[in-house]
Length: 296
Image (cartoon, rainbow, N blue to C red):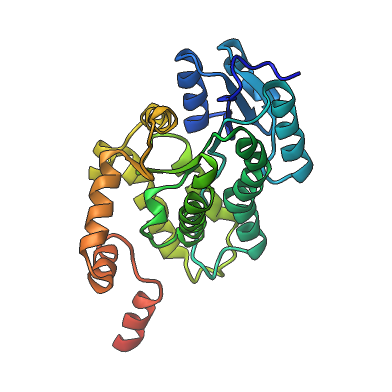
């Protein structure tokens, strides 16, 4: 029998809790009295969260059986997943031509298809109880694009579109859908993005470009002007908690000054001017070779 304190389950299921935003969100919500089910691919990575009062489960968002088992476990205990926080995801960098397609597929499996499938699995329970919240972690990168990050941005653009459609489709069942759009957040995100470029196959055509992307990414998070406007995982966790507890949550919550500044800038600039702005921070692949050829 489901162990619920009321007829409506508000238990929060969070993906990707082994570190960063997922971990901070689980800790914040548990400390504030929310019933939390924290998940990661390895439940052994969640000992700290279990000690903090969270239920912990193994959940791999690229594995159908794992997702089904996790949802069934939560529903057996609590009746339904009351709040789903789709946090699991990662970034990789590299020119569109350079990133092997199998790596592109893996990123979409985690960032998009896993999010969609897990949402599909929890919605019937939410509909039965007439209440639910789906909180999707997007990014300022769901509304703008930086060179070298095309595939990551594509996944977040997809999350934005899916969330906008879903918000309309499920509102009549008492279910709210919310997008969280962080800007620069001080986690291991930049290291993962930069580290991924080593596996690209380019024959050095994009070598200079990839070096510049790695340098710009590292500086943005650590030493550049935007680093001073970066947020923390707990800033994102606070926004997620507001989305969960608000009677009428906003459709989107932007997190960090960097997101506010860059999203405003992108909105105001034409495509041509935005491309010029990017050109002040990144070399244009092939341009140097063209200049050298013109001089000979």
